[in-house]
Image (cartoon, rainbow, N blue to C red; front, side, top):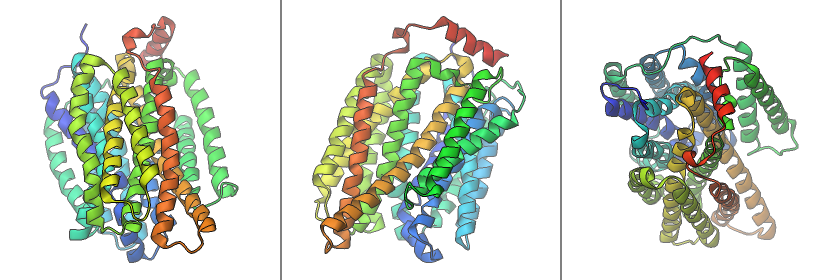
Length: 484
């Protein structure tokens, strides 16, 4: 039986999709290192500036669930070229920003483009490569998903120090132009165009649900949970998502087929991916603040310090991807979480206003050595259990939760960081600002350590899809629902 769709240039298609997604995901955290610069230039508070990151994630979380529907209405080329062109417009708008409103509008437009490219990348890679080659391909894709947001503060730190923060967007714009030209010539359609009925209510419930959830989590970073501004959107978001889920399960042609979560390895793989992204985005905002605010490094130097962990990720991702085809996911995911826990424990044991730089570097390298072994194997193992008909739904569901995880990681990390600072000031009222900031960051790593322990427990239940007893009723129902 054919396990994949034959295309003319599968490697070239994979490169275009991955590079386009890389630029978009790099944009998630690229401004983290520049927030202080943007605050000074536009005279805004930290809470307002933070929306440059959380707003980006908010748009992705709203748009990605709709992607499964879009892939059945538009060709692969139309979605990829369209996504790249929209991203280009957003990057140019942000680069030319005269005020904060113009900047955040540029970010939103760029996020719309990324929201189109990201789920298309995942489903197309599953379709154009045979299952025995997926490990290596998904290893590179795992590198894109983890390296891009982690590398954001590193590259942007160098760009900010040498050229200025607007050049983050000018460089992205140039890359988008080149990719659009190549994509128009290379990308071929691999999705089945069925043009299903558009359910406006599902789109509305999805938008309100994910929008309310991320808005509430993001607001929690600077407002008490008891405030209606926090729990109101959270409550509305959760209620909308519950109604959305019930509606999808009853529909013959759901916007997102939630029956993918009836496959146990997909559910476990998605949960592990969620926790991994949550930790990556937490460290991506905490460590730049710590290096600049507590250890008093410049943006460029702080970025270079973080480069060591990203280098580990870069080297290990293709290795893990290749070995995954031979050994499967279980060994990697369990071992990976052990290293993630060790990295977090080292952060907890060493972070202060006087920590030697090498200790931060080693802890970050341990953290990413583990993360690299967790992300791709859990993702590929989960998607491998799905039938071909559910790839688009599975990638849409997984990508949506990844964006929620990113927003949740950013928001909760800042919330715990703020609480840690307040607690430290109560105990040491005469502490210096670097000491207070270091204490807040250290306190936030209790959160990431707890998450990594939960991840290790989930990893123990990871198995090869072939080892999981297939539920024929689930498979028939899921496949039938998609074909109808």
